[in-house]
Structure formats: C-alpha cells, structure tokens
Length: 239
Image (cartoon, rainbow, N blue to C red; front, side, top):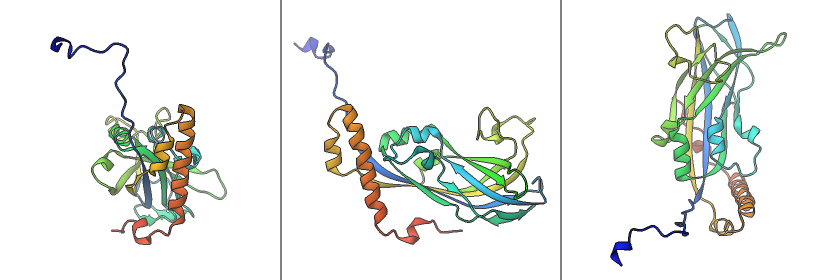
C-alpha cells in the first residue's frame, strides 16, 4: 500500500554505519621563544611544556599508550637563556602522538576548536621554577591545512579557573601581560585505515571489540615505528 510507504516501522532500528578507523599522527614542533621587554627577568632560562587538549584525547584511541604520556608530547630541554627583547632557539622541541580515529569523528572533534596549551617556564637552579606565561593554539585550522606554522602570544596571567584560556580574547581592562611569543609548527598526517583483519575482528561483543581495537592500533603503531622514517618528512622545513 503506497499510503504506508513513509510510515515508521515500529520495533525496527535503522542499521548504524560504523566508521572505519584510520591511523593519524599529530606532530608538534616548538621551535623558539621570542621575549618582549615585559619579561620579568633580565635573562630567563626558558623551557616549554606543550600539552594536548583533553577534548581531542577523549575523541581518539591511543592504542594502549598511557594517556599521561600522550597528553604532553613536548618538553624542551635543556633550558635556553634569553634576554629581554630577543629570540632563542629551543632544543628538543619536536614530538608526536599516534592515534586511531574515524575521519568524521576526528573532524567533528577538531571543528569544536580544541587548543593545545604551551607553558613557558623559567628554570632556576637555586629557587623554584617560575611560570612565565601560557600560549594556546587552536587545532581547528588543521581541517583545512595539513601544517600550521606561526607565533602564539605568551601571556603572563593564565586564568586558574580555565587553564590555557586564550588571554587575547579578554576585555581591554585585563591585567594580562605579553611576555613573549613562541613559534609552534603543528601538522596532522593520515596514515590509512586499520588492517582489514582488525576491522573484521571488531564484530565481537562490545567489550571484546574494544580490546581487539586497542590491540590492533598498538600492533599497527608498533609496526609503523619499526620502519625507518624519512628524516626529511619527520620535521617540516624551517623558514
């Protein structure tokens, strides 16, 4: 009966399309710190700790890697001495995180505008370390461009209630002080879908599927890591 064509079928659920899981690599390269004349020390010994947003980590699978290790892929070292109104190159500022995610699921997470947060610290051998300021960079542009390269302002008064909040968006009466800028290069690379055997095995029970999925990501990442990488492709060209 044609009149019943558009009537819902009670008791039947529409089949859900399960998205294919792909492997991705997010690379972060903290290259330099450029101080302003508002730097609180005549000469600072600078290190930078870069952290990924929880919103991104919640949307992906780390293949069994500890979340704490993935959350902070970059810690520059050793400290770099920088005077006021000057720029210094930071060492060991390159790090990356491999993870599994569906293409649309990852796009949805990035579209929400999660921000990586970079803490700039002054290291002192004879006193407690001092947080000079915090910079944030949105990951949303990675939906359009595979690589982001630019300077992010380092503001001295990060809001304790919203750590890493971008201070430039505050009202003009903010007491935030720009102590410098950090140059950050971010890139996102897609490495292809998980092996077909792994996808087939995830049709088990829900609990079993999760375990197999985590194992599949871990196996594929381990295989990828064992291969020799092209040094030229691992680190973007410096300007």
